[in-house]
Amino acid sequence: MKKMTRQEKYRYIEQALPGELELLEEKVSKSLWRQSYHIQPPTGLLNDPNGFSYYNGAYHLFYQWFPFGAEHGMKYWFHTTSKDLANWEEVGIGIKPGDVYDSHGAYSGSAVVKDHRLHLMYTGNARDASWVRHTSQCMAVMDEKGSIVKIDKPVIPEIPPGYTDHFRDPKIWEVNGEYFCVIGAQRNNKTGCTVLYQSKDLIDWEFKGEVVTDLDEFGYMWECPDYFEMDGKGILLFSPQGLEPEKERYQNIYQSGYLLGKPLDMETLSFKHQPFQELDKGFDFYAQQTTETPDGRRILVGWMGLPDLEYPTDKEGWAHCLTLPRQISIKDEKVIQRPVPELALLRKEEKNVNIKIDNETKQLEELHGKAYELFCEIKDLKAERVGIEFRANNSEKTVLSYDSVNNEIILDRSLSGQPLEKKNGCIRRCSFKAEELKIHMFVDVSSVEIFINDGEEVFTSRIFPSEDSEAIRFFSQNGSATFRALKWYY
Image (cartoon, rainbow, N blue to C red; front, side):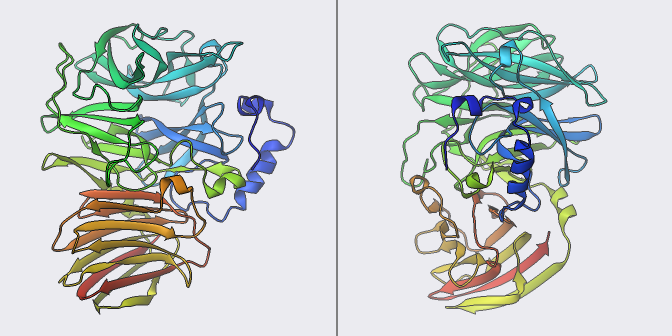
């Protein structure tokens, strides 16, 4: 696939050639891997979720959008809304780049409600004639009619001393009428961190300093920070770049995870925390963002993709999607993620199966499909290995298995269909010990999200199988197990 030039990447949508977008839309419409129920771009590239919020009776979720193709380039905010976290509607472009401070892109950010309006804070990306980057933190405001107007000057125009121009992704929240904001940063010594600002009005921001953690040298950049508190704990989510693999950990090109500890001390900025833990053990998860629902739940959405990797849909004029919304909780000093219960609204026809499998693989004709929800309990586990093959045909399959000898959950997409980049590998695994397994899977045309034992572990991955790869099989090796499965078509 021919790489875009800088001039092609950094065009505004108004600069499209006659018929260019129409041809791209037609090309995308012919893709075999368009999703059935995930948020995906109409054309071009989707990346970070932005501005996730509840405002004026609806959820609002924006995402980074480059309309012209599957490469990173001039970024817009694309706006989607939902009344129920399950069914999403496209609104269209939310924030357009093109002013002095975001001349080369409206980059990632977040939202908070103030004075009956939704305030959207984002990183403005500008380049000078020598192509030197200049970043600032900008603000736009959406009213109850959905009209979005940008404030004409950045609210944080400068980068404080000690940090490079990799200074982005503001995440804002409110406490007792005061507003706080964490920003992902890179120190001058090329190590990653996050910094804190405070404001009374969302316009004038005071730099409070760097959040003090135990991770002085932990990657070269921390992207997409998000801080919140629940159950008396403080949680800092972020996506560090530059970590080296350690056994089963840090296997993706870039990581996403969290620090869990005592609430952040707003005076000293000290954050006493446990070791960094990854949020997702799959192949394609990054740049997560959370919001709080009207009933007090904390909900997370991530980008189902990664930067600097090619995907099979790139040549079809589009790339990536967002994960389904996940409800966050804390259990045994660990962040637990479960699919939000509202997703049950998507369920259509139900099938259920109860079967004992003894050292064999069983394909059940009543269970198959390309887009569905599957809940499977595996009990009476007396086998060395058990699992599920899905999106399968005679030559393709994606395999989730549990190795009871080595106490591991394993996701294998080496035979999933169109190959993905070798640098990310084909197998993900994590240590896990269980007498019984509950596997909750959301399979779409080109993705899978898997929740193990009520969200103790999560695997998120893109897969690109053939159209006829619809089989679902259960298996056990060197022993037996009982499988009880419920499946809903979407």
